[in-house]
Amino acid sequence: MKKIVLHGRKVTGGYAEGEALVTHDTISGWGGINPLDGTIIEKRHELVGKSIKGKVLVFPGAKGSSGWSITFHIMRLAGNAPMAMVFKEMTSKVALGSVVAHIPAMTDLDQDPLEVIDNGDWVTVKADKGMIEVIKKRGIAI
Image 1: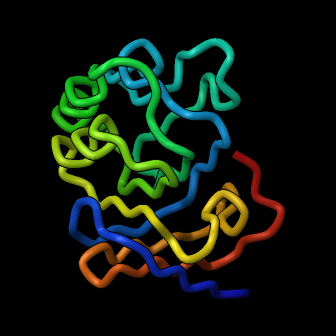
Image 2: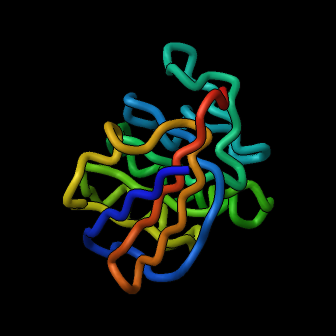
C-alpha cells in the first residue's frame, strides 16, 4: 500500500481518521444534505444518495447559503457528521460547518486533495500538525 503525506493549513484542530469520500462537486449545506442521516440529497450532485456520516469528506468547498452551520450542527447532534473535512476553497460557510460539527478540517494543501485522494483511501487528518496521511486503496467503490 502506498502512503502519501500532504501538508496544509488547519481550519479546525483535532485528529481523525477514516475512509475518504471524495467529490469534485461543491456541497450545499442547506438543501444539499439531509442532516438527520448525513445523506447527500441534492439531485444533481455526483454523490446523491451517499452518506458523509463517519467519512473523511474531501471536496472543493461549500456553496449556497449560510445553512451550512445549522446543517452540520444538526448532523453532529444526530451523530451523522463526517469524521473530518478536507477542502480546497476556504469560505466562512465551510469553516463554520467544521467548527459547529467539532471535526478537524484542513485546506491550502501542498497537493490538490482531489487529485491525490480517491474514494476508499484511508485518510488520517492531523490538523494541529498541519498534516494529512493517505493510505491508497485499490478497487474500492463508494
